[in-house]
Amino acid sequence: MRAAIALAMMLSGSLPAWADNSPAPEYQQIAGLIRTPLMLPVTLANGQPALLEAFITRPANNDPAPVALITNGTADTASFDRFVMNPNRYASTAIAFARHGYAAVVVLRQGYGQSSGAAEYAGGSCAQPHHQLAGERDRDTLLAALKAIRQQPWASPKQAVLVGMSSGGFAMLATGAANPPGVQAIINFDGGRGALDGKSFCDQPGLLKALTDYGKRTTIPSLWLYAANDRAFPPTAAKAMFSAYQKDGAPATFVAMPAFGENGHTFMDSAPETFWWKPVANFLQQQALPYQPVVALPQTHLPVPSVLNDEGRKAFQEYAASQRYEKAFAIDAQGDWGVSYWARTRDEAAESALGYCAKQQEAGKAGCHLYTINNEVVPEQTVQR
Image (cartoon, rainbow, N blue to C red; front, side, top):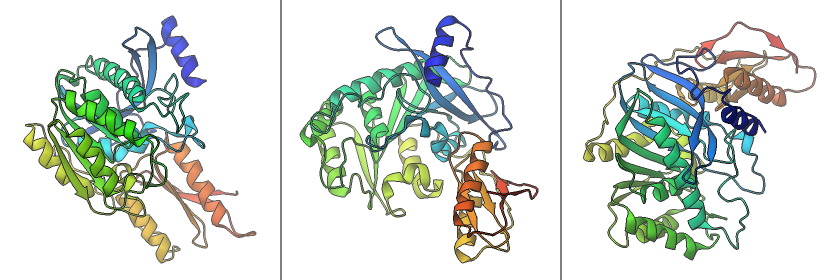
């Protein structure tokens, strides 16, 4: 509904084409970078308008920078709530690219978050997942997004990298098959579609056929990164997809990544930059693209709350090191705690962290209070839940 209202405002001329992209206090800012949200108006290949929820992370110098266009994965369609997803889920990925000299723009495709339209799988089923059609729809959306982004003074019109995870990785491979001018590289994190249980897929022959078609048509080098413990696309499935894509000689490189957490399928949005940047940097260097840091990661010195037990201390240390903004950490006097990542704003992160903390409490305990929002310790304010 929110996207529909905003799209109507755009069509009537009452919505600015771009949000003010100066630093905003409700988002964690990093020295040398600007982080800001926007609703991106685009015109699709069929001439229809669309509005895409996005988030910019870029060097603060305003010089034209290569664009890193980043797009989302998806979720189980049976339980999928489009509005739960937001671009901040890919904050750490965007920061990694931006601090190496890119104008990183996370774009949620149609049907996700507050973007207008329907998701690419709308109307499909496991019996008919329409892999090729989904790729075409995503291609049109992402090409329109790239065209709109390149109109900004801080975006290079001649250099771009396509980055996506899961279904977003598949979407970027589909987009790359169109060989858009100025796109020099594709980075596919655990990409694919139709995963069911890590062993079977919705129309696997159709999926492999689509990837073969994309590989046959593209001239753009791609990097494929798959974790050893990916539960959606384990090594055997990942290699089958890669082989299909490279069947006719597509310029592509496969990197088997180590296991990450309980499910490596999420490493792009969850793992620290140190886990995955080295193979990405090597690939970017080979394509004569920026790969060295121009902005340092923030050094945070947040004191660990003394009331936390070993588990809580470990969680807080991970929180302090994480670039998964917007985030918050809440505690109570007895050491109960709650943490939140990837909220749309700092206020949403605070509310979620307090809620998680309250769920850990036993009846009669004192209320939780916020300890940190993003990288700042906040004054104690007890909130009864």
